[in-house]
Length: 124
Image (cartoon, rainbow, N blue to C red; front, side, top):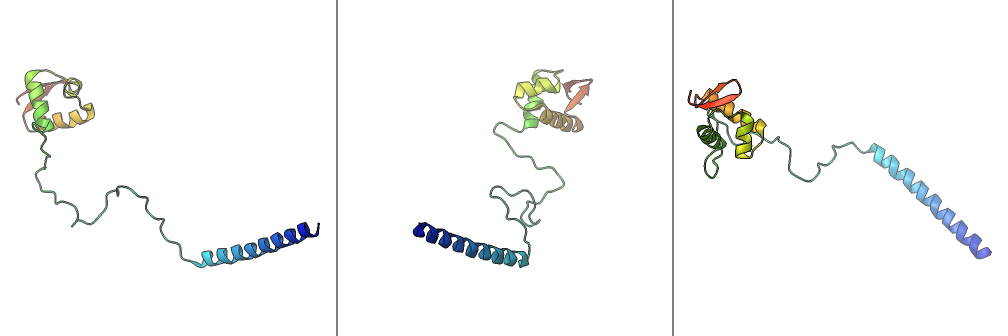
């Protein structure tokens, strides 16, 4: 039994040392200044200086696509199917209707399409 008592005393002594060390470390941690949490890995969200961003000119820059822009595709679809609605254009081009509304709105402003009720027609 003496061996067990010695082991118990040794463990309790070590636990007391660890408790003292934990208290000391917590006090040191409390005295350190707080900093921002590290950013998670992955793609950064916006931001950056103006020098890093491409300059935007007054005219809108459009990314060209193989076979033309979405505007070109939408215009061609409506020329082929006059009187189509935005939903029909979206289904025909296999893109989301919310995006089509923006494209068709721009084409209408440019005078390439005209809108009557819900239908779009070629020309102004």
